[in-house]
Length: 446
Ligand SMILES: Cc1cc2nc3c(=O)[nH]c(=O)nc-3n(C[C@H](O)[C@H](O)[C@H](O)COP(=O)(O)OP(=O)(O)OC[C@H]3O[C@@H](n4cnc5c(N)ncnc54)[C@H](O)[C@@H]3O)c2cc1C
Image (cartoon, rainbow, N blue to C red; front, side):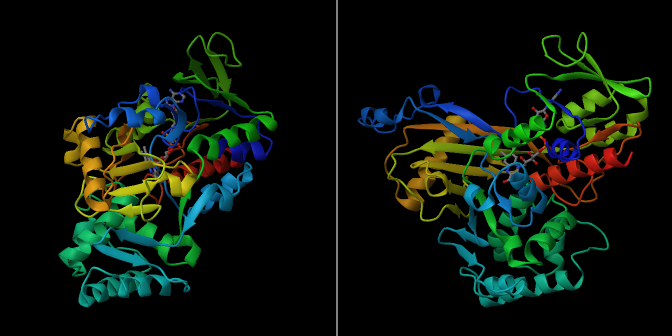
């Protein structure tokens, strides 16, 4: 969508083929009906009191998303297609609160002073450890956040004598949130790229932005309107089945039912940007012999999950902050959708990267989260319903020295966009957007 917006802006006629009924991909709104959600009869007498909550429709995201202030291109694009960042997001200054275990909040000082002061004043770690964290950040800054050789985050932290407590309370939650990859597998260089952009430039770059709108409404639906107003075509429920090089152009084959502009499910284009997720992209490109290396690179990517457990409590139930972490619990981050977006009583627990939670049935996982909410915040009432959204291939596993395919392919006119393509960032909205903008530039230059 980023590529399509950038091309439509320059007057290039684009056609967007989307296999799903709705726009947004891995950052999309999901219509939810209470009546179809599993309800929890936790207390024998609790059933009827939960009834008034059931039978409503609301839109959930397929996973709670968080943007950073340094996601400049994503934020710029949202405004370009009609959004308003200050209205569309709840903006929080950089903070990390692991309920009762660790807290760190950036004061209103210029970067990177705000971070150093936050580290030195953090609660929940001895002063020596806080000093080590500040020294580590200064060392990274002196090295321009560049490593001579990539390594795992675990190895980098050990090299810089970061204590066990520091790792568990600060660096591990940060790495998992940013890279969706456990520290013993995660690329230190990619984490440093994020730290460089988020913590080292202006203070606003480290702000955390929580969307008040569902993700389909936030960007892709607005982008679709922008594209159509400039003569582009948006085709949903219209999957690409094959990409065929033909007569100096590229033919796209769709399912017969798709109302594509061409004849009998085939349409020829001068340029094609394949923006499907990596596993689909690999299958579409596999028959093209000149793309053997690209396909091999995509096939070698491993993936990491993200689970989101939504729980609908009575409207008066709240958390102490819009976003709060838990230490050594199943729920890594909790979001109070009431405080963020006026969805009162709706809480979301996010569990990023691989872990033992994957061994639990959905109801068991929801029960664990409910027990944690009861023990940590005294929320004794049962939720009316829960919904677990398990994205098994949420992101690629962001390992050291990963070879990610470039946007330009060996087939003239065929480009690749997506969070998994070559770039500085882990699998994030900004990474996906940057890849799309790069594809648009390559099309315009050709
Ligand atoms: C639960 C979850 C939480 C996340 N949290 C964050 C976060 O807090 N911050 C952050 O920055 N990032 C987060 N991410 C990552 C972010 O959502 C992704 O990096 C980003 O959405 C990837 O965008 P993309 O365009 O590369 O791919 P996708 O969003 O996967 O888009 C690919 C599109 O291609 C379509 N498609 C598939 N096959 C075909 C076909 N054959 N023909 C036509 N279309 C097809 C799909 O339907 C989809 O719309 C999260 C991801 C998940 C799953």
